Image 1: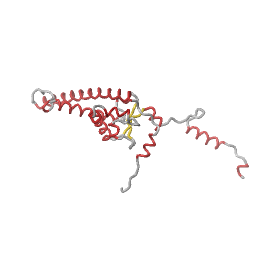
Image 2: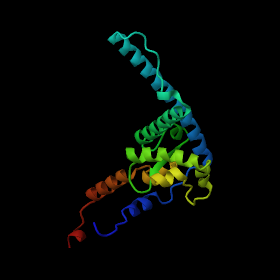
Image 3: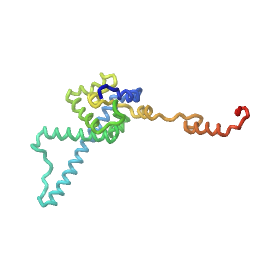
Image 4: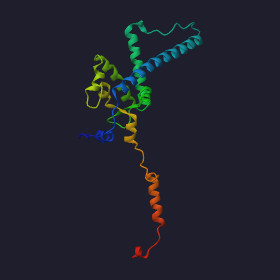
Length: 206
């Protein structure tokens, strides 16, 4: 393709008017997700230790001595924690279609401003953005107050925004308007039935 095509324009129009999430909602959701991610890491390590213990017993290698990182240095531990954070946030964002457990509880959602759905790569890319925001001494998170659309570093990296779930659903899936107790499809059916039952008039035949 030799010419630029603004495919994302339709998506931007689709999201136009959706209410953006508040800072407190995002901060509390992140704190809860961070806590859950450490719990997730703890459970994974226990499962790995149980699996390795069973494997050692099956192979007759004696007692399993536990899981130890190579070198067991602070850098290794930090790398493991970062990996678990990326794994948790990436998978939960992707599987939850923009709603991690924390975001689901606080009624917010991550949405792409380019694509209809968040891919696994975009979700992982956004989770890596948390590290980029933290490396700036937390200023990457505070950009929420500077950017006109409340986008932080991870949002700009993955081309996303964070919106309020209720507003998002109302915008993309509006509730059908009820007319005299009838839904739009029922109104159409009622009108069709009225026309079908209308008496024949000679005037109509002229």
